[in-house]
Amino acid sequence: MFSLPKTATIIEVGPRDGLQNEARTVNTEDKLDFIKALQEAGLKEMELTSFVSPKWVPQMADARDIVAGAQKIGRQMVLTPNERGITSALEAGADSIAVFVGVTNSFNEKNINKTTAESMETLQPLIKKAKQDGIFVRACISTAFYCPFEGKIDPQRTIDLCRQFVDWGVDELSVADTIGLANPQESHELFSRLKEQFPEVLIAAHFHDTRRMALANAYAALIAGVDRFDASAGGLGGCPFAPGATGNVATEDLVHMFHRMGVDTGVDLEKLYEAISLIEPHVSNPLHTGMYTLYKNRK
Ligand code: HMG
Ligand code: MG
Image (cartoon, rainbow, N blue to C red; front, side):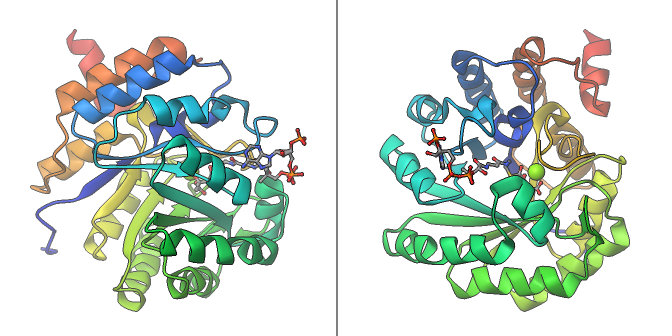
């Protein structure tokens, strides 16, 4: 038997990763109701929204109102790619930011219109200043396993990029299988190496479930020592600039799996289903993850 942690933390990314790719416009009030219900279900860490160009990601155009309207419990993070985003986020009242960069230039150029090196040059002084100001900084690493344009990524490239962020003093690395192509062996290898090399930072695993391998990948990361997982209620989501990417691992399926293995998350599944049913009428497709479908069949 593998030894498992007694607890794991879920970082709910539904309001951000989940809704950024949504074809329908979701009202700010409906997003805020969803966020409140997720918090009431016990999800204390969340990516609330993104301070990005509304021309690039129209669904996140109400970022200021989301930060102003959301309860400040636990750790509520916002994505920010540049100085303008960080300034707006802090003015709106955010105290935790998430910067994001891809391991590959081709993905990063599509996502942020910069090469990876250009993004890193932009981010270094911003992270330094944020840390001086006592802001929590998470670094999201996209295309850590596979890139939609360049294929398989040598894990060493991901580790080298992570090292730069760790040297700059970030609090957390969120390492992403952006297009959901990684397998459990690759997950175990990369996360074992990251946990060994960067014991001083929090490490979260961020799996998209494109090929239904996210739960297996999460289990592989768990036994590699990871106890923080990004997940999206209802399995919503995907990056608009990563062709072929679907939603994140569903929070309800991950929580159910962990609880069945004796790993507590502090999340109340019944309340989580209620949160998902609040957002479901506002998104383009019915939500049918494993656990949520069972909940609907039971009603
Ligand atoms: P650009 O066109 O190169 O930048 O876009 P720019 O500086 O020329 O600005 C263009 C316009 O955007 C200007 O407005 C700026 O003022 C405005 P205009 O003069 O045309 O009216 N602008 C902003 N507005 C609001 N907030 C800002 C901001 N910055 C500039 N922060 C830029 C560069 C980074 C802005 C653009 O590429 C962008 O917004 N990209 C966002 C991409 C994105 O949000 N992707 C999804 C999130 S990442 C993800 O999902 C992956 C992750 O989940 C992990 C994984 O799964 O892999 C984290
Ligand atoms: Mg993502």
